[in-house]
Length: 222
Image (tube, rainbow, N blue to C red):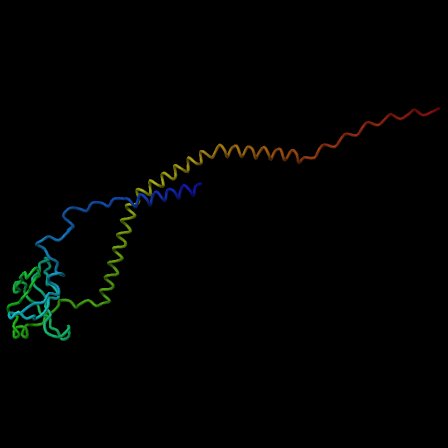
């Protein structure tokens, strides 16, 4: 009976947790969608081909240069080489680039990107070495671990009220079942006690019969 009650309580707990409404996010934190005057760097900047003054492609944008105040000040452009081999990376001021909308697509050009200027431009120097594949894999593993822990903790916190309620209801149901079973238990105990007493009495040996009194002896003949 107790196992059935606890099982029903657990089922109620999971059902309650499944329909729990997520908390509303704080205002001014998240962005729901992209507006008409916004674009994503991955869609319109990263990988975009850069044209020179003659309209020919001179390189492609590989990264953005951002200050510690989160302001984009330039781009890193790969130029020369073939399929990334022997490619030189140069930094270009954002103000030196020319952006145009060509049939719904972003067109980027660098008017000063003559062959002589590109050859003379210094290679862009990173302040820190590029992360290795192993370092990026470790960071990704830590990120996934943190996300999993946060999700688990959030689920536990949301389930706590339902768990406490289920535990309370299970305890109440158990007490009611125990109260309902007490009279029957007492009656059964009395019946067993009576049967034991009756069996004890039946098992006792019957008292032996008393001997019959002997007849008086006949008087002797003179």
